[in-house]
Image (cartoon, rainbow, N blue to C red; front, side):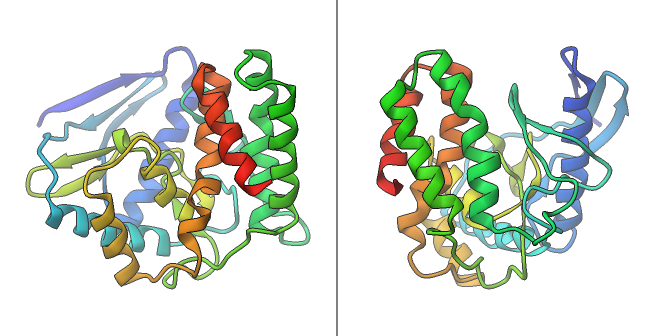
Length: 263
């Protein structure tokens, strides 16, 4: 059996979070969800997964991915921002801290409040500090967050999701590997509870192969709520502002441009 060993680079919590997320998503894969990297062994400072053979995606495997992703989301989660079982405290998205909620707010909360408070605003200060977002841009992001938090863009989940979706959480195209025979396999999750449209929107940030077929197949299995294409940019704001905070440069301008559409 060929395996891949990954070290913690000095922070064992990052691996603990990844392992918990892979196992949580694997529960959904056993019920028809997307395949995930198989955890073979875990040490205090490293994890070992089965190596995934690389292949080329096709329209057929892209459609199968869309259908399976709908079932992963439908596996559900207790509340927005919940961590995977067995993990507590904040998580990680790359090198960025990811706020997680061990329990829901007393009033149950809304997606908009969660997204504004935990997925947009926590990264703004670092993006301003590195110069990628200026003061005017910061005001635009805050106006956007205010409208999001007020519920302006809250929308129903896709049809199969009853409550909160089980998300990969960092679903850019590089975290989807295409294996011969099995098709799409997920790696490097930032698993959490959230809105299914967030995973779908992240696929488009850096481009994903046959994305139109992925989305169409998803929508056939679990129809998306009316107006979802107009919310894609909003659901991309999290991954964009994280990149602005970590890497600066043009990610800040792209974050502000997107936020302005919803401000």
